[in-house]
Image (cartoon, rainbow, N blue to C red; front, side):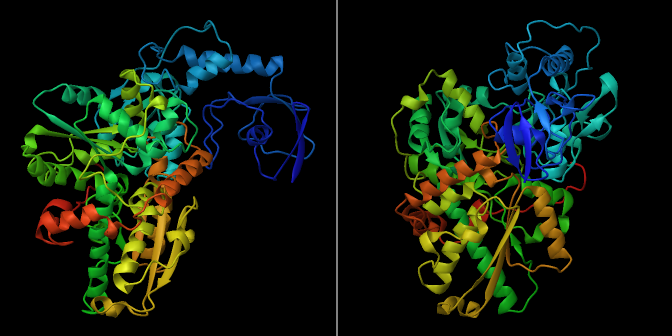
Length: 591
């Protein structure tokens, strides 16, 4: 432990802590625009300068490690003047259309300028050349708002291992962009939106679907329905000043009804369906390997996360047979909405408009994939991020916090607790294990309160081995078998896991991958700003939602049982295969 003094406060922190984090632990806020928790420090913005007794120059606190006896001052006239100069220089090159900017209400850059009480700019002259990139279905870029903090580059390289963005050129031509200044759709970008989540300005934002949803809601020829992903209920409250992890399922449902949606459904319904389809697929692959002794693609990888799927298509075409063919819950819902639900209400699929609310920008990309039209039409018409739904609710004048709790509509609003935990890293795996264990053994799930502790939490790669003591006759070949499963979140962690599998260091039967740190609760479309502390609070809320449900196993959801009995037939059956399964294709290193 290291002892130092910051603004006359004695602080004791572990060796290796940065001065910035030491100050934060002591309740002293040092501003920063480039710092990102848990990754290598860039030290590029210079807004976090501090005065160190005995040092000739001011120091960047984010990249300076603590040392015994250091005496730090964070708000001397010299420090304040230097920070103001840095901010003024950044502001002088920034496209300042704050009145109409989508980030004006949560812009870190503007907030820092206000905190430093900057009222006028002393620097004028040349500015960056503006590049507008609207080439992808999920993300928009505006280089005139980029302050070259390099956060997007850091998260794209260190957390997601894709390197779609990099610092190009120098001086006023310098910009965070794909190689050779290409548009984003020309490189191996997985559309995860982590860049948009960490950007302190509006240089990278999600593709806005708000106006198209308002247009559909006001079209008398359309019946407009909405599905809400599990992570939304643990994040949406933050758009309205509620604390991280506030559970707002009922208020969210009430708000969506008041916005004018004809029916408010739950993506959790098809998350339960995903478990039955994906779990049955895993069991059939294991049967092929263990009974038929025939070659089969194992381990099986989950396919719920469109960022991960696109990553595999770009970088691991050899693994595409290992991906579950089950569509994501979003796309299963869209396919069923325009077939099963449309039939039940006597509506033509072309007159039904399906909106998703997702924590994820990659879902915008997924919805427009050409193969996602099992109904004969685009199955999901528009995708709103959590942030976009927050803006729609604000636009409508609703007082979100004062809304009553209202239930989801039926028949596609019923779900189990297992579906809720899809939001957390490890949740899809835990939900699958609950159902697969029960189907194979005929016994209740053995873990206390239905949780699998080794695959919970924020460790980058988690694993567990589960031995089947005895199986029912149909699955007798699994008696005594040990199933090895693993969970990875953040694509850099997934890449490490894949390397271990392909080199023979590790052997698994089933692997869950989520693109975003923490899983969907840390998605690229969630309210800013997502720290590990915020992730933990959202995860707690999701587990609380699961634990509050009467039905906590996907296969015990009565609405799912009725769906199979009256419409689908059986998991992996002909109708299920046509509507709920798909295939993926190699994309190479560019789109």
